[in-house]
Length: 375
Image (cartoon, rainbow, N blue to C red; front, side, top):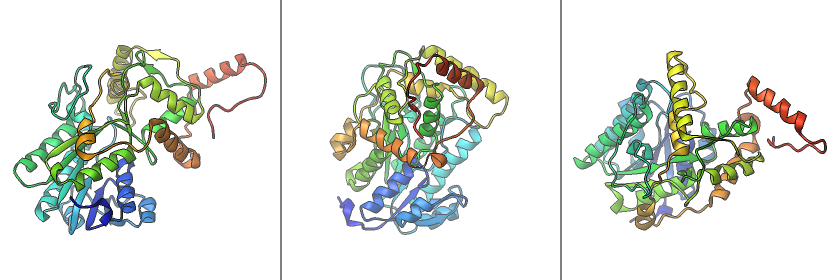
């Protein structure tokens, strides 16, 4: 096993301008590695350039771009993918499956020492609620829904990589995180901050169900440990939580960090799930590019009554989260408030939100006013 701190060899990171990939690049640079990032021609790379990352612009579905990017690389960390659960199947086919295949074929041809693929617990599909945590021996693709391109793309991306691994063509390690949060998140946390300000965050179900959420920096740390470990070739690892936490506890911590009131409103799981389904059908008929406010996947992510075991990563890699949930959430929210104009949406509030705000102002006791939304 080589030392993470020896800085030996070049490391390629894809998706390095996104949430998880940027944390991987940051950790690798801090450990003394020379890092190259393959990014889109239009990507903003100021953060990576500030780290000293070598920038290569290209297309993950272009064999020539991938060949040039993997040349001389010791490890490849593949974090690039179509983000979110909304979009046409073609977007997921190209952004997840085709991109993964093209990069893996290039890595195989040059014989990289390790190909670390960031998948998702969504590769397991939608298993039924169960008391025992799901471990890495569980089958992939359980109960994949109709019109579920995100889950389907995660399953198919893993399947093609495992086929290459079994054929001896790729030294593969798969990391399966759950819901990710952290600095440089452009999807979930900024939307949640806005929804908290609009008093529109609800608990799905009673709120006492286990929630699988993990800070992106902790996933990056586990992935680097796996790349260093020779015995992790051909292995998959769940990296899904800092420890046990419920949906209510997580939302309370997030509300406290934002400076917003804690959530008290509940929706039954069935209502959130089928409400999301109806909104999805409506917006697909309208061919809307933006996802509806509630989707089946979002309702399931919050309200499901199941969890994923991280015991294998803890035992085999010696992985242990360095941050508590409180610390990780506070660090994440602080980053957004350091530059709120650039990092937090400033959409005009909908009519019902404005009416609700007016009602709260009318019934609020007179006295010193406290800003519950922070700048």
